[in-house]
Image 1 (tube, rainbow, N blue to C red):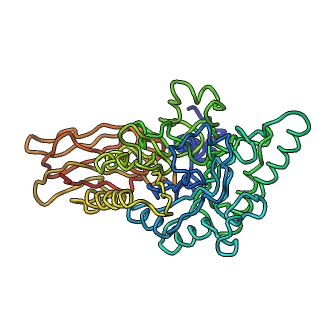
Image 2: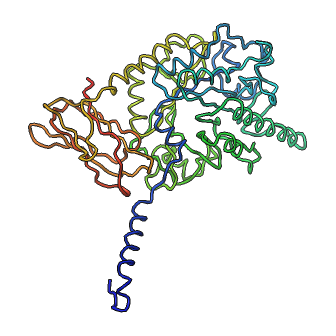
Image 3: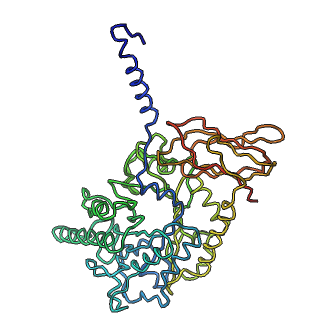
Length: 467
């Protein structure tokens, strides 16, 4: 750059301006808000699905349950109901948060709503004050689990709501839609104001938007629960579905996304639904919005089953411990948050086999990742051992407060044969679990960042021998 003597005195300012602009350009990256950051750091949650049809002792039929009202509300009679036992099963699994289905497709509310007459108060328990949601949140608070609520408003068999729309025609349909929207907005306000701080609100299948005639829920949540993760409607998604109900996500899985929303199912923009929802599965490293991925799966998903609600004679569908650990490695270990679906039974308890498997799962994750061989020297990005040791797994974590910055990296290990490449990857994010193909005996392990946006901040670099 040529600078004449006339403007020579401006040179320092020009240089500083150029450096400032280059820094701004180099560090443009999507940043999380505090609820997104907390949600990704939590890593594992449990959702408890419970509704009237659990008590009919028949196989769950989603299509009919969405349109056929339950004939008798009084079949809902869990004789040993203990939501604290639910929460303890989540705690033993190592979950940091848990959600309860306040409403699902029948329209029945698991709390004594004042705006939805189809609720637990009709059953006559505790003088009409039975409140599964309230008791669940109290139990979560007691045991150090962050509470969340799932609200199903897309279908309501009791009131004839299908895909957010009141069934019918003409003025009758218009008036019923108005009633339903007002009722839903009232329920959301109740759930946001009755029970204290919530960690996440999950709208079943999304919550559509008022522009499409659906209830206007986003401003209610933001007003009364500003620190709660909002998932989701056509206007905003603070997390995104990871593209399957397998409990796993693709690698790489980025925490960034090109839009502030995702849509739901057939309502997705084509760019999101294309190639079997590939964009949801991978995210976009250059996306301008921070939107971490959720990997979800029911605990009872083995042997060809996929059950979010309890059904009789279905005990052999509980996933094996090996499958659950692999699910964790391919979700939490790929920069997603894993949410497992658990099914309380007709007694009102998490079945013993499910409870036991969750505890085994929590114990195995602690065994594998609780005690590293050695930890990172952050300044050197180098792990050093006093003696050569076999390594089977590695964990790398970014500090995401300043966004997901690493775009490419590789890890090498110093062996008897010299330095060898152990892994080459792209996304790190909240957590990247690396399983080596075979145990590798090393004296040193080095992490090298090959490409990043701005200055990456590595939070954790650890080595394990877990076999």
